[in-house]
Image (cartoon, rainbow, N blue to C red):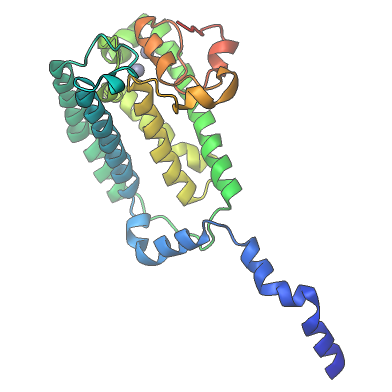
Amino acid sequence: LKISNKMASLCPITLLGPYLDYMKESLLQPLWTYLRTNHQEVLRSPLFPVIISVSTYFMACLLYMTLDSLSLVVPGINSYRIHPDQPVKLQSILKAIWLTVYNHVVFVFPAAAAQWYWRPPLPLEEKAPTVLEFTMGILGCTLLFDFQYYFWHMIHHKIQWLYVTFHAIHHEYFQPFCWVTQYMSAWELVSVGFWTTIDPIILQCHILTGYAFMVFNIWISVDDHSGYDFPWSLHNWIPFGLWGGSVKHDTHHQKPMTNFEPFFSHWDWLCGTHSDH
Ligand SMILES: [Zn+2]
Ligand SMILES: [Zn+2]
């Protein structure tokens, strides 16, 4: 028996056991364990999704606003703008920021407070998602959001009453810049916020994946409205024109009956609403 025990302990599988376990563990596990251990209350708070959404939005806008200011004096930056001959006017920026602040004070923060009051803290599971689950979760949520917004957006252009009441405000700008992203009616803001919150739940994503999707979703929405066409922009390296990005959304602001899809291009192709220029 002693010999067979010794043999078993020398067996490669037994020797590799701890390492195999380590390999089975997600690459995101150390990060998740750190977050769970040190920031549990923050992660579980129903306010946290609002905090990360709002802070990501303001940081992304501040980044692009800095680029807009620099583009006035650095021709190298201005050359990446979709409309290099039309600088963003200070008056347009202030008007867009004003509505953004108004929407946040009147709708977003009260909604967040209500959520904080009604929703119990979220449970945090011990295991992190695998890198594959994490990536596919973000992709799945982005595809689902893209589908929901496409149809919302299309009917809000095709039905005159819906357009005038809820969506025309977003089209006050013909050449978008970062702050135009959330220059929208409360109904549009609520719809977008609702899908961003509900999509990770529908697709049963890990909470880490859900938060990462929120950040990603806001980043690509601001990038869509940034007015920049950088070589590293997603639409320049995702093949077959599958990603619409800033150039396609800029076209939507000039030809509003085309390019209803916020991120990808497939629904515009399938429904005949696509326009390149
Ligand atoms: Zn827009
Ligand atoms: Zn529109």
